[in-house]
Length: 537
Image (cartoon, rainbow, N blue to C red):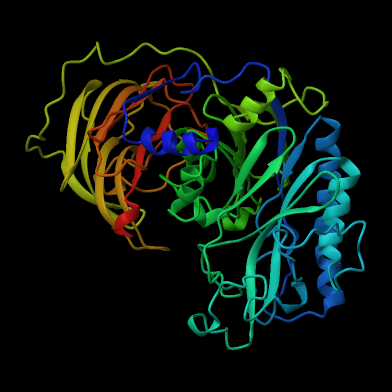
């Protein structure tokens, strides 16, 4: 059995076996010295002001080249800091809000690298109308780094690159072609390494859902294997969990994420998936304030660097480059390096300087010894109520004291909280513990089990579950739920979009998940155990 197959089994078992994550490090011991330098760029996208009006190919190219000029500048900056791979965001080259017709001038036909070797930079005449692919290819070659970008793809129907598909079972779109939201990966020599068509579209009428699920990976000489998925994919089983089941622990995530408080801000879900799935996530978002788009980062189970633009009047709306040296998590690649006696850092590049905010490290004192055992059933109380949070009807209970314990249930899901609150400056901020088990149906449909400790936006219970960005109250807490799914993603969000890392996360075979933290660096906005019940979607 290969190490990758063995790791796939181990990853599947992680959700079923007792596991503890301490703030000091990863759940699995990483081989010392084997690391690489990654970069992500949060791009202030230059938009087409009239995206519903079709453009000529020349006009569309002129628009895209303005964004590609920024990519060129940032790739050069990343390379100067030693980056070996850079990730750019979803929609960063062409923008968004197109119709199926109006995006036509932006489309290029991207060959399948599984069936064809092609270097657009050195073979520009092999395929027509591939100016963007050529630009990206030459960018990767010029700066000697792996490069991931997102662009629109045009494919003939039926798909000639998918010979095993039965056309009779997959009727062509009415206009006779497929249009896909597509990630492309280039090697450092400029050759096309991977192509991924986004599976889970988010109100993208210009694109088609691919007729066959694509689980896409690519290999690098400096860190082994990576998986690729895009934006809304992160909330679904396919392809994200499929990649985990293949043993992939290094993920590429271009996104155009609109932040939704209190549970689904960009850096919040990015950190949660990195911790919950025990993976590295290289996440690049757009910066577009009017759409609440910001939040990018480089997340590993043991460390992070991230950026969320906390906009204040007068501050510029601009992009952000993040660079960080991180450990390799591909066990097959690590074993190969060890067997070849090539210990130490690979790639021949220098140490990088990270930019943005860095996740804190340190040890926290466990709370479990400071509080008695929680009662398994909630007691009747006037502090209990129902309220909508992000379109879902949660069962809530207020935190009425400076310390204590609460239990709140929604059907089979019970959420337990032990807490010690430290208000700053005598504030009277209101907090509530919420539970939800059911189908989320707003802007997507998927099954959830969620335990969430949230700061209410006002002093009335009706404000609980509403969006709030700032808080003053520090909270030491232990949040626990008994879940009917092994896919639970833990997150903490502090005032000013600070993503703290829990002191301890524990999962047991009976579905119990515990998150514990003390000594917060900022007031608590949200602490959440976000469970996805994929088989009920």
